[in-house]
Length: 121
Image 1 (tube, rainbow, N blue to C red):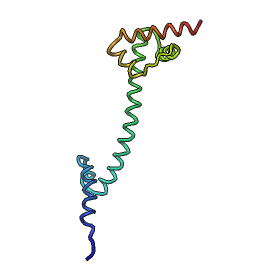
Image 2: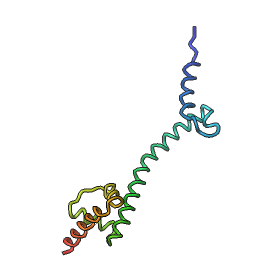
Image 3: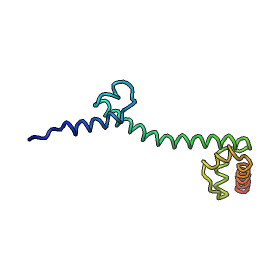
Image 4: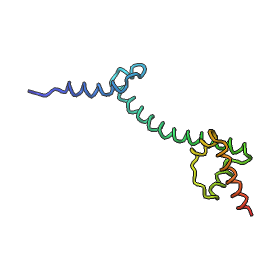
């Protein structure tokens, strides 16, 4: 007796149709389109995970820059001053300080200003 592939092929197709559930139009119902969209969606989600990191870093830098300029210092001067003072704090934490704890952020700004003044002399 020969083996027919209907069970395995239906199972394979069902996997892609299930993954494409909620997609609009024929993409959510037709196997060939659902399979294409499944792989394309995977590429989009991979790229999106990379872009999310980029977007958050830009947000942190924008927040730090705004808070630093309120204290009379540019973003690049603040970062350079902190590096000269050997202060190891990342941009995410600086951003959180700038938003939630302005006094703590001002301490870092003062440290950066002092180290910049010392490096000029």
